[in-house]
Image (cartoon, rainbow, N blue to C red; front, top):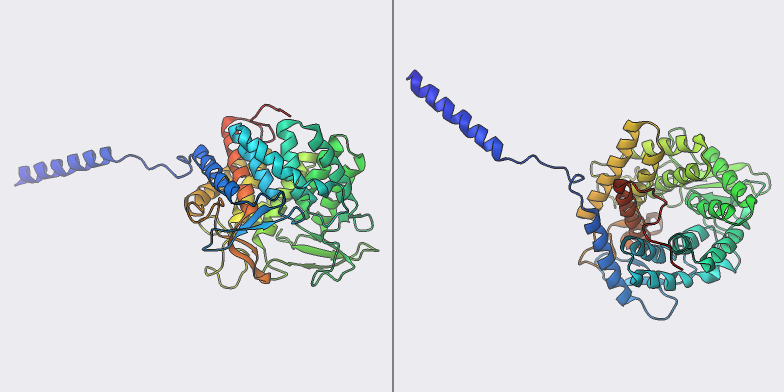
Length: 416
């Protein structure tokens, strides 16, 4: 009997060993993430979109409603007008395919009037630096440079020295106490246009305006836990802070997901442009506030304090934006463990977006499930052009990091 038990035990152990030997170790999604496959997907989707745009010389794709395949088109004045040509420039950078360069050039030139007309609002950086800025980085075309420099001067006209920031909305907007001075967190992104212009032939004062804006925003836009207000309203004569509000978020004391993303991205960029450690410190603290409260799949609900989570809309645009920001932040962070955490989280966000948020055959955008302005009932669960822009930007940044290429470097040889 004892011999039989020993024989049976040996068979069980042997079978377990064989079974374990046949099992391949599981790899994480991030380890097997095919960046080039996702970039190829973006190119395929953009090719479809090109066939859908009216050939009237003034239409740019902005969004697609849920369960629709039809883009809503806008003109050059819309604040999102720079994202489509910017996306095309990124596709050109990745492929070196002249088709993308020609299309990017054509759609960028739609925006030329922005450089020679009075400022409609603060979004000139989104509009012109995403389009002509990327174009100049990749081609060195002097015509693009002239447009960028003129636009920077136009944006500077919105600077109020009494306050120390750029006026975001030079018009009446609900709850902004017009004609007082309002500044929104999104405005941080437009500072890159001013920094660039000041270093490439523009006025030195543009640099000073950008730094002032960053400093005043740092002082007034953040709560003790480093979550941010969307908007701060100032007395336009004295610069005194009147109030902080969250125009596109759930409540004035809530963390609106994309607004927090603008803060992370914006202060990371300001650190890159100035080398001032206080901006790096703030970028890390705003990133911590965001990352600590993310759901397990790393895609935020439109507002972290929305009342009906998990039955609230997600915001893929915030995830794409933050993934791109974290990739750059990882290159500046001195703490190697923290830097790796940023890199890992960014890549996992991109994996999740690629696996579960791509539009694929539903429409010709790149991503589904973004939320524009829920309190206004606008663009809820839509495909939106800025989600696509930051998604492809983040993919390119990750590709560069893995290849040991600086994020600001061009992957193509400059040709006018």
